[in-house]
Image (cartoon, rainbow, N blue to C red; front, side, top):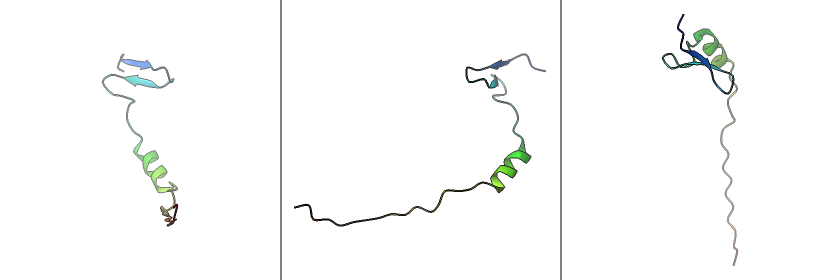
Length: 51
């Protein structure tokens, strides 16, 4: 147990030595596996005579 844990203004626990704590690798991999990515970028180009 480390006494340096404090709750920040957003309500998250933070430690000056450990940051926000250890990451849960299983949760990270599960989230990454099921992550929905954004669709591929579509670029539209239009030539216009404004004169």
